[in-house]
Image 1: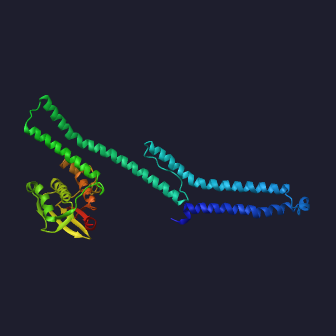
Image 2 (image 1 turned 180 degrees about the vertical axis):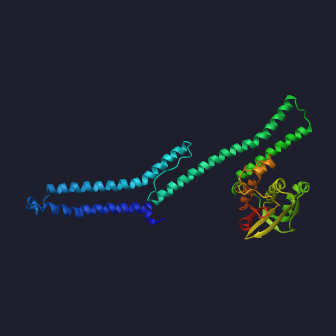
Length: 357
């Protein structure tokens, strides 16, 4: 972008042009006017008269009118360049305040850099507001959908107990408790996703042995691992890492749960390394991998592939988004890679420096 398009320079050029025109009218115009007038025989006799004549007043009026006309022209030209884009922004703002988030500032490309930036930034803001509003509606619909099933079950069972249809037996209360725990997990997952930034997400950073973190996670899945035919390969590392061990264990639980539910039975490789001042924990399965079309959305809330819905229709698609929220609270992130053999690798990565400060 060239500096000649700056608003301050444009105003300066307009003012200089206006001043130059007025000087030309005052000096050159005066010379030409009187040269023409006094070249006429009828006015030659009054050439040495020092008193103001009618001709002098005529010239003053003409010069003033020309100067005023040129000043108005320059002012209108400059104000049009500035106010026309601002007016379309103002009108679009009024439409947005009345709920029309599709409003955009439409104007011709201005010669003023600041005006172009203002219109561009306004349209970008309006577009993001529209996307956020669409996401909000999608979230509300998804949350309502996920809450409807357990709430309906709880309501039906409780109505049955009140009406005497069901007998108050331990198995019934156990089922109600499971539905309540499912609701609690869903609410906690939504809270974690909603408070993913470091300022509102509370994490307790302290040293913890890598072996202890992995062992706690594997304890929760040992029965499933054996039943479904998986086996774990992990390093024997006695090194301490700085993290919120409970949250990192939760991330491992989410990934292992996804592998057990959707991956082909076989080897699960858990590895650890420090790379470029980052802690890195990777979990690799034996395939079949995740559809490439779905990979860009796999860490978004309530996103599930068609194959995943068919295999596990009860899932809600929050697990991986929770893992990302936890890693972002550690100033890191979670990544996915698929090898040429369609083996999936989930990588948990967060920096040493930011956590240790």
